[in-house]
Every structure is written in C-alpha cells, then in structure tokens.
Length: 199
Image 1: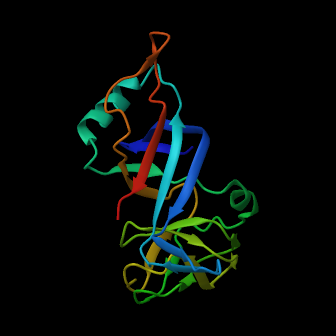
Image 2: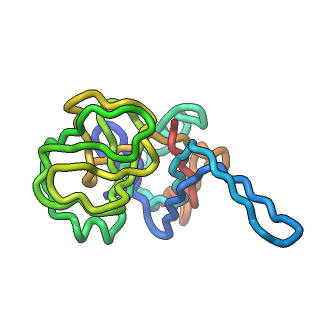
C-alpha cells in the first residue's frame, strides 16, 4: 500500500491516476539546420502527481499533517514500486547489504541477496535519503546498477530497502491545499497533489 506515511502506518493511500516523473535539468537548442543540441545536468529528483483516497475515518490525521507540515517540512511516503518489477521480483532477502562505494558511481556491490531484484525497482540505502532505481536485473549477490549515480558514499555493510518498504522524504508542492476539502459533506478529498523528493 503506497501513500503518505505517518506514525508507522499509511494514513492516506495513493489512488490512480498516479504519475511518477524523473526530473533532471536539461537544456536544448536547435541550430538553423534544425540539428538539436541537448545538455543534461547531474542533479535528479523524483516527483509524484497523484490523488489521495477520499477519507472518512482518519481524515483528521491527514488534515493535521497537511497543516503542520506545510510546504517547507518533509513528509515521508511509501514509494510506489513499478507493477511489472513487483511481479518479477523473487528476492525476499530481509537484510541485504551494499559494499563500500564512492560518490558518483552507478554500480554498487551487494551481498545477502537470494533471488532476483528486477530492473525498475526503487531502492533506498540506510545512510541517506535519496531514492534510486535499478537499471538492470540483479540476481543474487554481485554488482547492482542504479540510477541516478550515488549522491553520497556508502560505507561497508550499508543496508538497503527494495520492497514495499522504501520510504521517500518529500515536500508538498505549493499547489497542494493545506487544509480540508470535503465531498458530499463527509469525505475529505484533497484532489491531485504533487510531492517532490526532498534532496
């Protein structure tokens, strides 16, 4: 179950339509001959546009969180995993570990993995908050390919999550209503909200 996470549980579930976007600065220009030149920068963040399940019971928790969090404080969410990746995943390893790695690498050595973690799976290392995505299947121990490149070095034996337990720290976009919106007098419905990965 994916959604806004608070006090050890999901208090507001994401519902479709949901859009997950990789935002990376890109600069493009066209020459007179219409040849396109493109330059990208290394910073990257995930952005989610989604609706929240209308709430009846539990609406007070979401309302309180929206008002007290505001636009400047982080809110944790359970990161939505790709459905195809979930269906192909065979690894149930409870404590996989990543080896020591420096900033900027896209390959991370891992141990403690039995079975497969598929391409497209989102992961998070224990020593920092950035969420990464696998770019190739990883079957058992070995080197795991990730995107974007590492933003922080990994010390030896760093744990990581890769199932429906990847928690991403986000900020609410300024279009999100910090209060109550009610349908039919009793259901709290915030409409579409935008969550931006906190870097």
